[in-house]
Length: 496
Image 1 (cartoon, rainbow, N blue to C red):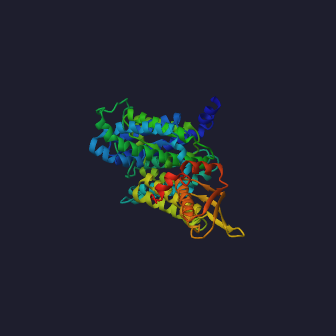
Image 2: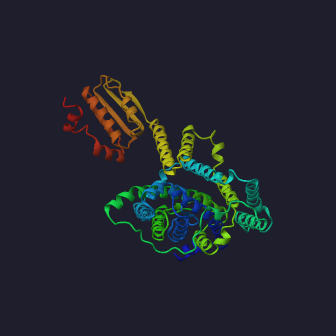
Image 3: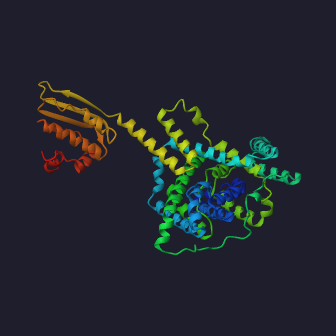
């Protein structure tokens, strides 16, 4: 236990501290922007980002992953804030946390294994596009100075790592922010800064119980929003965990992450913050800046609060162009460029799932909807593909009195119709043997199709024998089949 804690917290102190610093700087304008989207004061997003990042550092299931206030969650809060106000948002945040903790205990994090690689790739590509699109307002209707600063920032980010000695020791996004801020202050450039995004808080957060009536009416108001926030939050967190797993070649505890996200959101709600979840962009900044352990997440949250409360006058001077350059780097690094070249190599169904996920997420800005459609499509394609692997071979004995059907493959809802159509019910035979040695029946639909085949043959006067069932098939057939139950057969045959 002690060895594991040491590994997760103190095995990469220098890298985690530097990476956490970069993330903290990048979190400030995003937290403010997400607060504006949700229609609340900037401090609500900043307090939430601080609390969620610090709490998740201790209780989360994925070291090195950054959680804070996010745009996906903010979009779901707009109507609640507009119609009922901030206090109801805080109450919804607490309920969101409770739902997520429950999800962790019933092991919903394990459901990620049903999300195909093509859906994850589509999700990542869509997020990369959304991150880039989010920077466009900072690059429209501005002076040439902003473009120049952004270009210089990108130059620093991509070229600084090649500088001897210090190039590998300092995160280039941090160097970009410091250099461009110093230049803008010295020259006195009149360009948009973090201070223009909104007023930074000047006090530490305090414990705050939501001022709402504790009754059924309140629950009915916040429950739909809390369920939506919990689902989107867990979905984005699980996706982010999968991506960071790949980037670091390590494994995360997703059910623990579900619980951790819930605890963090309860903490945020009690400190006057809005609900949040894992952030793919910031997590990638953290990893690419050298962050690997829980210390990087803790540093990001702690420094965020210290900077906005005690160093606010300096933080306000950071030009947005510097942060835009960092986020453009994130979008470029997030996008799976190999997925474009793989379009020629991968099956058409895989490409359709990936592209559809991208289109739905970018079009609706709804991550949950995009992933749901992607998973649904992937499932349908998979079911169709597996359903085609079922074949029925037939042979007859010498005197043509016995017909044997050998079923090979998977019989389930997608292949059950083809299974029934593989039999010739009009052939005059005394006995039909259905050999299931190389078949597997999966569901009620497949058992129902077997009932239909047996009953039809018996109706035509043939004796039917089932042989070779494996244990799993025999279990489901014994439980749900009706072809040996006279009363049920009568119901199936309509009493005739």
